[in-house]
Image (cartoon, rainbow, N blue to C red; front, side):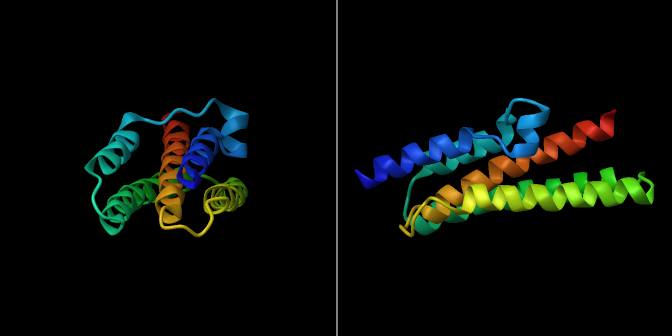
Length: 134
C-alpha cells in the first residue's frame, strides 16, 4: 500500500512541470534521460545499485545543465547575466522543493527524488540549449 502510494505520488510529481517550464512550454523529456532511468528500473537489483544507477543519470544531466548554463551566460551583457543567474537560482529552488519533498523517509525516497531531479534537470538543460540556438 505504501509503495503504491509512493509510486502514485512520484507519477504526479514527475508529471508536474517546474513553474518556469510550465510558463514556457509543456514538459517533455528527451528519450535519453528517460530511457536511462527506465533501464535503472528494469535492471532492478538491490536498493544501492538502483540508487547508484539513477544518481549516474542525475550526474550526467547536471553536467549537461552546467555546460548549457555557462554557454547561455557567456554571450550576455551584465544585466542579462544577472537576470539569468536570478532565474537559475529560482529554478533550482523550485526544482529542489518539488523533488526533495513528499517522498517520506523510506528506502525508495532517494530513488524517487533523484529520478525527479534528473528529469527536471534535463528539461532545464533543454530550455537553455534552445535559448542558445535562437
